[in-house]
Image 1: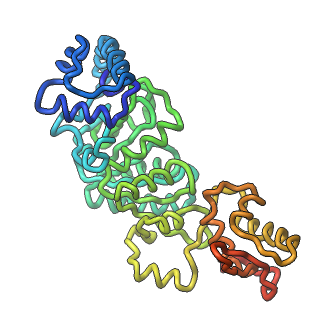
Image 2 (image 1 turned 30 degrees about the horizontal axis):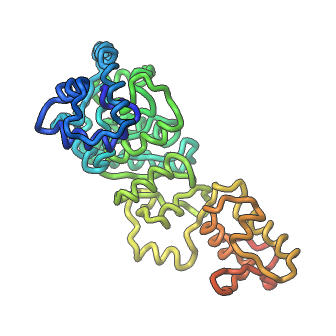
Image 3 (image 1 turned 135 degrees about the vertical axis):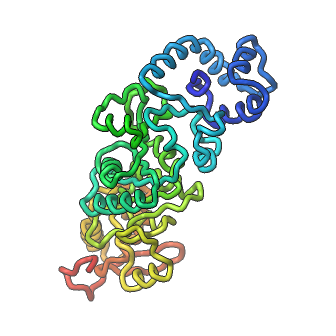
Length: 379
């Protein structure tokens, strides 16, 4: 515990230490005793790392009392050095970003069972919650543990649906396990159907940072990942993007044309589209769907709807007297984030009120005089 929560020492560097110095050589306790005496054990500590691990060693007596307190509450501590108890899938998916310790309350055997993660926004639509329920039901039928992040919306629906269909679930906390005081799922924890876990210091309070960070553990524990609904920023979005960067296959529910979410943007970013039943939409099917109408995208990174953006650009173009406008100029006019450039290009290109002209490296948008004033952007 002291080593896992040592400050000024990244998780990856801690993993390097465990692999190079501790694995198959000596216990972490013996290694820290030698470090206390000034022996660096051949490891290339930076000055900051050395100070951090020395501070952690001083805290070992306090961690001893804390460990006893946790044990009395029925909390089991699983170390990355434990070959059979620690989930192999977490090491496989996260590599050196896997947590050093996992604090568990409930049936720790669930860590090594087949698993499905269902994630989504806190303020999700009924459509997304119904999708979550369907995926949880299918997962339970396959005897997979349903993993969620213990937030309102999709997370709570995933947990409740798993239990409704007599399945099992893992709750991944965005806080220290000692701060988890809810009794709502206590009977299920005692029965062994719910496991509560945390990878943070047991006393750590909830924070936005931890809520964002714990997503990697949710994704890391899961064999399959389903996204019910995502905005274009926040925990769900970051979790999917990071998962894709790690080479994970992430299933995202394709949004209907009247929905306001970023699901289809994630599909454009490389996520795998699935229908309302969670069945993968093959590339040839996707091409047929998008041939008649591009994937609907909602851009919540701005406070403006697609239609409002177009209408404001029309006003701006009328003042420019036929000179046209680029996406970069749109960003300046509307005071938007530069990261929205690709999204804005899609919005403007999709509008029948505008026409696009390529000049050199840039696309210029002009008014389209042939378009009726009241036509909508999407049918």
